[in-house]
Image: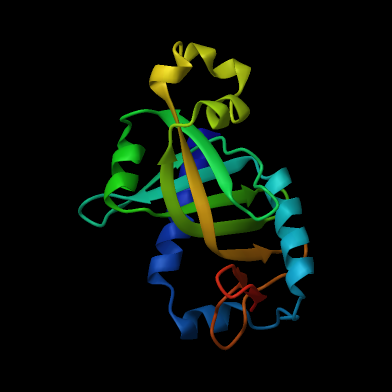
Length: 188
Protein backbone atom coordinates (compact mmCIF):
# COMPACT_ATOMS: atom_id res chain seq x y z
CA UNK A 1 0.00 0.00 0.00
CA UNK A 2 2.79 2.43 0.90
CA UNK A 3 4.64 1.83 -2.38
CA UNK A 4 1.40 2.22 -4.36
CA UNK A 5 0.64 5.41 -2.47
CA UNK A 6 4.16 6.78 -3.10
CA UNK A 7 3.89 5.90 -6.77
CA UNK A 8 0.54 7.71 -7.00
CA UNK A 9 1.95 10.75 -5.19
CA UNK A 10 5.08 10.94 -7.35
CA UNK A 11 2.95 10.46 -10.46
CA UNK A 12 0.57 13.21 -9.42
CA UNK A 13 3.41 15.57 -8.59
CA UNK A 14 5.21 14.78 -11.86
CA UNK A 15 1.99 15.25 -13.83
CA UNK A 16 1.49 18.58 -12.10
CA UNK A 17 5.00 19.69 -13.07
CA UNK A 18 4.90 18.39 -16.64
CA UNK A 19 1.32 19.10 -17.64
CA UNK A 20 0.65 21.52 -20.43
CA UNK A 21 -2.58 23.27 -21.23
CA UNK A 22 -3.13 21.68 -24.67
CA UNK A 23 -2.55 18.14 -23.31
CA UNK A 24 -4.79 18.72 -20.31
CA UNK A 25 -7.48 20.13 -22.58
CA UNK A 26 -7.27 17.08 -24.86
CA UNK A 27 -7.63 14.71 -21.91
CA UNK A 28 -10.87 16.40 -20.90
CA UNK A 29 -12.63 15.99 -24.24
CA UNK A 30 -16.12 14.79 -23.58
CA UNK A 31 -15.93 15.22 -19.80
CA UNK A 32 -18.39 17.80 -18.53
CA UNK A 33 -16.92 20.72 -16.61
CA UNK A 34 -19.47 22.10 -14.21
CA UNK A 35 -19.05 25.15 -11.99
CA UNK A 36 -19.40 24.45 -8.25
CA UNK A 37 -19.87 26.79 -5.31
CA UNK A 38 -17.17 27.45 -2.72
CA UNK A 39 -19.10 25.65 0.04
CA UNK A 40 -19.99 22.66 -2.14
CA UNK A 41 -16.42 22.26 -3.31
CA UNK A 42 -15.10 22.33 0.28
CA UNK A 43 -17.78 19.84 1.36
CA UNK A 44 -16.83 17.48 -1.46
CA UNK A 45 -13.13 17.94 -0.68
CA UNK A 46 -13.73 17.05 2.97
CA UNK A 47 -15.65 13.92 1.88
CA UNK A 48 -12.74 12.85 -0.33
CA UNK A 49 -10.18 13.55 2.41
CA UNK A 50 -12.20 11.49 4.90
CA UNK A 51 -12.23 8.49 2.54
CA UNK A 52 -8.64 8.82 1.26
CA UNK A 53 -6.35 5.99 2.29
CA UNK A 54 -3.37 7.53 0.53
CA UNK A 55 -2.16 10.65 2.35
CA UNK A 56 1.14 12.21 1.35
CA UNK A 57 3.25 15.16 2.47
CA UNK A 58 5.42 16.69 -0.25
CA UNK A 59 8.28 18.96 0.79
CA UNK A 60 11.06 20.66 -1.17
CA UNK A 61 14.73 20.22 -0.26
CA UNK A 62 17.52 22.82 -0.33
CA UNK A 63 18.20 22.04 -4.01
CA UNK A 64 14.57 22.57 -5.02
CA UNK A 65 13.85 18.85 -5.40
CA UNK A 66 10.45 17.54 -4.24
CA UNK A 67 10.20 14.68 -1.73
CA UNK A 68 6.98 12.76 -1.07
CA UNK A 69 6.22 10.46 1.81
CA UNK A 70 3.12 8.80 3.14
CA UNK A 71 1.93 10.41 6.36
CA UNK A 72 -1.00 10.23 8.73
CA UNK A 73 -2.31 13.79 8.98
CA UNK A 74 -5.05 14.66 11.40
CA UNK A 75 -8.38 15.66 9.87
CA UNK A 76 -8.16 19.22 8.56
CA UNK A 77 -9.65 21.82 10.87
CA UNK A 78 -12.68 23.84 9.75
CA UNK A 79 -10.37 26.45 8.18
CA UNK A 80 -8.41 23.63 6.46
CA UNK A 81 -5.31 24.01 8.63
CA UNK A 82 -3.64 20.58 8.60
CA UNK A 83 -1.59 19.11 11.46
CA UNK A 84 0.93 16.29 11.12
CA UNK A 85 3.25 14.72 13.67
CA UNK A 86 6.86 13.75 13.04
CA UNK A 87 10.27 13.23 14.57
CA UNK A 88 12.24 16.28 15.59
CA UNK A 89 15.20 16.68 13.22
CA UNK A 90 13.73 14.48 10.48
CA UNK A 91 14.48 15.13 6.83
CA UNK A 92 11.02 16.67 6.31
CA UNK A 93 11.51 19.10 9.22
CA UNK A 94 14.84 20.19 7.75
CA UNK A 95 13.14 20.74 4.38
CA UNK A 96 10.45 22.88 6.02
CA UNK A 97 13.07 24.97 7.82
CA UNK A 98 14.67 25.80 4.45
CA UNK A 99 11.49 26.01 2.37
CA UNK A 100 8.02 26.17 4.00
CA UNK A 101 6.16 25.44 0.73
CA UNK A 102 4.47 22.04 1.00
CA UNK A 103 1.64 20.01 -0.47
CA UNK A 104 -0.59 17.62 1.46
CA UNK A 105 -2.08 15.20 -1.06
CA UNK A 106 -5.06 12.91 -0.39
CA UNK A 107 -6.06 10.21 -2.87
CA UNK A 108 -9.18 8.06 -2.71
CA UNK A 109 -8.47 5.06 -4.94
CA UNK A 110 -12.05 3.78 -4.95
CA UNK A 111 -13.53 7.12 -5.96
CA UNK A 112 -10.63 8.01 -8.26
CA UNK A 113 -10.53 11.36 -6.52
CA UNK A 114 -7.83 13.58 -5.10
CA UNK A 115 -7.52 16.67 -2.97
CA UNK A 116 -4.28 18.59 -3.03
CA UNK A 117 -3.69 21.28 -0.39
CA UNK A 118 -0.72 23.56 -0.95
CA UNK A 119 0.43 25.97 1.70
CA UNK A 120 3.08 27.12 4.11
CA UNK A 121 4.31 24.77 6.82
CA UNK A 122 5.84 25.60 10.16
CA UNK A 123 7.15 23.49 13.01
CA UNK A 124 5.27 23.70 16.31
CA UNK A 125 6.72 22.53 19.62
CA UNK A 126 3.83 23.43 21.92
CA UNK A 127 3.04 20.84 24.66
CA UNK A 128 -0.73 21.50 24.58
CA UNK A 129 -0.86 21.16 20.79
CA UNK A 130 1.33 18.04 20.91
CA UNK A 131 -1.08 16.48 23.41
CA UNK A 132 -4.06 17.40 21.21
CA UNK A 133 -2.47 16.05 18.02
CA UNK A 134 -1.30 12.69 19.26
CA UNK A 135 -2.20 9.07 18.58
CA UNK A 136 -1.62 6.51 21.33
CA UNK A 137 -0.25 4.04 18.80
CA UNK A 138 2.68 6.39 18.23
CA UNK A 139 4.26 5.73 21.66
CA UNK A 140 6.53 3.14 20.06
CA UNK A 141 7.92 5.76 17.65
CA UNK A 142 8.12 8.60 20.17
CA UNK A 143 8.92 7.14 23.60
CA UNK A 144 9.50 10.69 24.93
CA UNK A 145 6.83 12.81 23.30
CA UNK A 146 8.20 16.04 24.77
CA UNK A 147 11.69 15.40 23.44
CA UNK A 148 11.23 13.47 20.14
CA UNK A 149 7.85 14.56 18.77
CA UNK A 150 7.14 17.78 16.91
CA UNK A 151 4.19 19.03 14.89
CA UNK A 152 3.95 20.36 11.38
CA UNK A 153 1.21 22.93 10.88
CA UNK A 154 0.19 23.56 7.28
CA UNK A 155 -1.60 26.86 6.63
CA UNK A 156 -3.53 26.31 3.39
CA UNK A 157 -3.18 28.66 0.46
CA UNK A 158 -4.85 26.64 -2.29
CA UNK A 159 -6.91 23.47 -2.51
CA UNK A 160 -7.49 21.54 -5.72
CA UNK A 161 -10.04 18.78 -6.31
CA UNK A 162 -10.40 16.34 -9.15
CA UNK A 163 -12.89 13.49 -8.87
CA UNK A 164 -14.41 10.94 -11.18
CA UNK A 165 -16.79 9.85 -8.41
CA UNK A 166 -18.18 13.38 -7.94
CA UNK A 167 -17.74 14.36 -11.59
CA UNK A 168 -15.39 17.23 -10.82
CA UNK A 169 -13.05 17.49 -13.76
CA UNK A 170 -10.51 20.04 -14.91
CA UNK A 171 -11.49 23.06 -16.96
CA UNK A 172 -11.16 22.07 -20.64
CA UNK A 173 -9.34 25.18 -21.90
CA UNK A 174 -6.83 25.75 -19.10
CA UNK A 175 -6.57 22.20 -17.75
CA UNK A 176 -6.89 23.55 -14.20
CA UNK A 177 -8.93 21.46 -11.74
CA UNK A 178 -11.58 22.91 -9.48
CA UNK A 179 -9.85 24.84 -6.73
CA UNK A 180 -10.24 27.11 -3.74
CA UNK A 181 -7.90 30.01 -3.17
CA UNK A 182 -7.82 30.44 0.61
CA UNK A 183 -6.05 33.78 0.33
CA UNK A 184 -8.90 35.35 -1.65
CA UNK A 185 -11.54 32.88 -0.37
CA UNK A 186 -13.09 31.98 -3.71
CA UNK A 187 -13.58 28.89 -5.81
CA UNK A 188 -12.32 28.61 -9.38
